[in-house]
Amino acid sequence: MRIPPYYHKPSWQQFFSGMAIGGVISWGLFLYIYGVWQEEQSKEIQTQKETIEDLNRAIKIWQDEFAALNKKNIEQMTIQEIRIRLSNAERYDFDRLSVFQIEEGVKEDINMVMAKDLETVYKSKELIRRAIENKVVKVNDKRYRLKIKEIFIYTTLSISVELQLDN
Image (cartoon, rainbow, N blue to C red; front, side):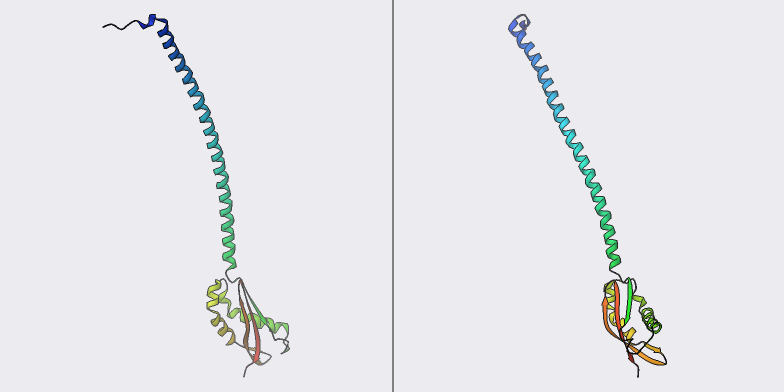
């Protein structure tokens, strides 16, 4: 059997040349569409990368600020200062030096609560009360006992004390 010679007929020549030209045109269209699509995808990827970098920078800033705020809050949640106020010093006509010495003596007695967290200080407030109220102060050859009027426990431990003559 013999293959018929289709290359001699112009209709077959047109068919095969049309297939070749169509193949080239379709390949060109495919490359164009694929190139446009890839360009759009690469632009989208680039914008997403920039967005991710911006968000990562923002996250870093927020984390740094959050860490600083946490550190500040931790500092604030401990006893930073102790203030003692003698409320009835005028009644006994004490001079400022005596009042200062009494207040400093009480501060030294309860200095162990400095830099402790608020919960620990609150739990040990009875110990603080006993430490202050059991203290006897000697001023101008008279003995005085301290009595706590009020205690405020926050970052500053504020204690208001009164003097009473000791029997």
